Length: 211
Image 1 (cartoon, helix red, strand yellow):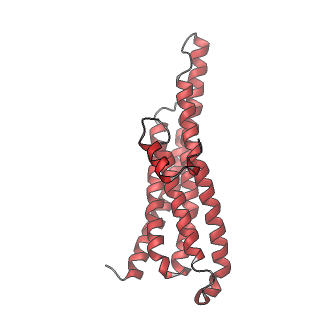
Image 2 (image 1 turned 30 degrees about the vertical axis):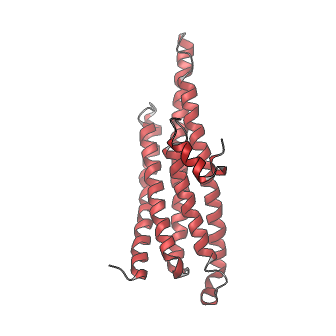
Image 3 (image 1 turned 30 degrees about the horizontal axis):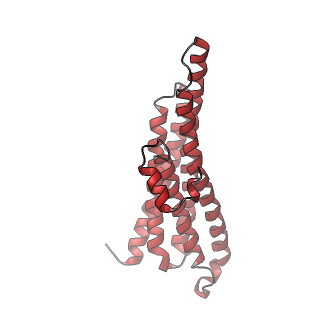
């Protein structure tokens, strides 16, 4: 099922259904995609304005990269659901005889690893959008400041939600070296997103003249 091609209403209905997918991971990727689109918009409203002519080339690059990251996040919506569906399928495999039980366990472990890698990719994509957002805050059209502040909140929510999914799935993984690797990267990537979100909030409030 291609969630990214659904209407907003239909996707919300899928989220609220009793089906295991889509879930928090897909919602996290969608939050990131919305932030990416807001960054593209902020770049677009800077382009063509003589006041920001010196930044046009950079804005064109930002708009293009933001679109690319948004497309990746829309794909990750699907992949997150596929990863968890694979786990459910593996869990339904026969438990006997012993060879079947071992095959079932191996499939479940691989599915859980995939269910960790996908939200980690979401955080990586979100981090890159956050980097673009910071440039937009400094060089972009200030009329988009509230939109960039919103993007910052969405990026923070996306990273946090993806982290929840990673930690939930790590609990079932027996490969300790895999767990350590994932947690190490998570510990590096997520704070970068949070830092950018804080910058966006502070800059937005400064530009809006609020305390």
